[in-house]
Structures are given as structure tokens and as C-alpha cells.
Image (cartoon, rainbow, N blue to C red; front, side):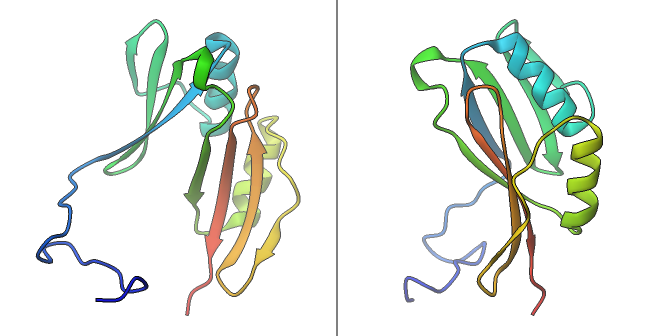
Length: 129
């Protein structure tokens, strides 16, 4: 196996993952919660406690925010969407500012939004080959 070859589920030595959680650290929890509610267009799916909430973004993928002042502002998250133009328009209508959509080599296109702490949330549209 080369470094470029994807590891298929069930492959000997592969990590068998049931559910994926990505966490984003924030300083002002209330401001961040409001921003992510606008980003996703809805309230969180789970309120773990007063400074941690979670959104289910795919069948088995979750994004959560938590108040963690020391680590805030360094997050990078990418979310693949089927139509970046439609997603960009919907986010703009909800008050989420995105950088201009740009090509990413032959891989597709992406646009990046920054939450109140500067964590980057990119939407990407992968080129179908």
C-alpha cells in the first residue's frame, strides 16, 4: 500500500469508525452558538451542557463547539456539499460571510467562512471524475 492509496473499511489494519465527531474550540460560547446556528440554519441537535453543543451534519458525522479559551481560533473544518453555489447563496442569506469561491486545482472548488474566533469552516464541492 502506498501513502496515496485510500484504506478501505474492513482492510486489515484499518481503523473501523462508526461515528465521526469534529470539535471546534471557542471563547464566547453564546456568540459562537449563534453563528453556527446561522451556519447550519438550525439549532443544535444535542446540548451536552451549557458550554458544549452538537450538530449532526451527516448520517454519522457531527460537529460540536465547546468553550475552550486556550485552544479557540485554531480550528479548520471542511464540509463537502453537492452544490457550492447553492450552499454559498444559502449561507449568505443567513448572514454568513464567505470568502470568494475559488478553484482548488483539479479537486473542485471551496469557499471559507470564519466564526467569531477565527476558526475556519470551508465548504467544498468535489469535482466528479
